[in-house]
Length: 273
Image (cartoon, rainbow, N blue to C red; front, side, top):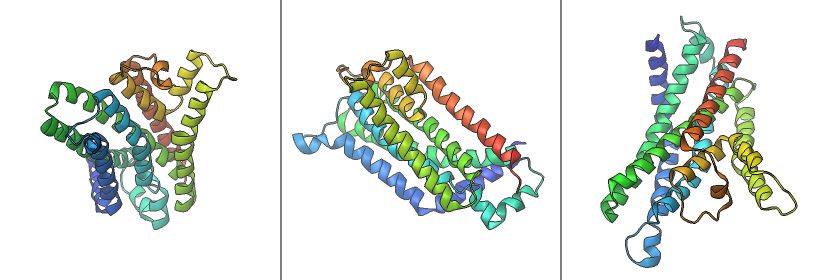
């Protein structure tokens, strides 16, 4: 059962690493991580990094924009692209189940994204340790939370890409819809949430705002990192709002991944090619 999945995953990994834009986005993520980590050195004239809670908040802010965008660019043509080229029909003619095809693609895409995430944030953590002497006992737990939650967030948006790719008739429509979803989920939803939190004319209970966080995987990711690396100054609206334990936030993000996987499988099994 696992051999076909690994074979398809291997093909996806090779194809995606041949795409220069994957490497390019990885370099962007790495560069931004290093710039944020060491930008304070330019002002002070000494090699220094921000306090770890502030650094984690900044790195998660980068991740919440770049990682979903990378995931949808990686997955938008997973099915419609191969359908247009005819390779999907050829793949379906082999003795493979549709679940194996879906899981193979998913494993391949997540492997590519995980390698990018681990390299970018791992290099950042290593350089912080080498040049500033920050103890690994402080760095490793926080960066492990950052890497693991980033992979979960990427999983969610890869599956969103599959859902759209299975429902459209052209690749152009798939990328247009996914970019709209990215803007709505990552930018607009967060802006609306923050506006409601600070608006004097709108009174919302803390419980309702927490539910709104759970309805958006990007906000769950933000909240998770705030809980993993709490700041001394809790004046920011989101950090003062989050009342979930870390385990519950991981469960919520995992549920998002599971739900999107079930939707993707259902659409793929019902689709007629």
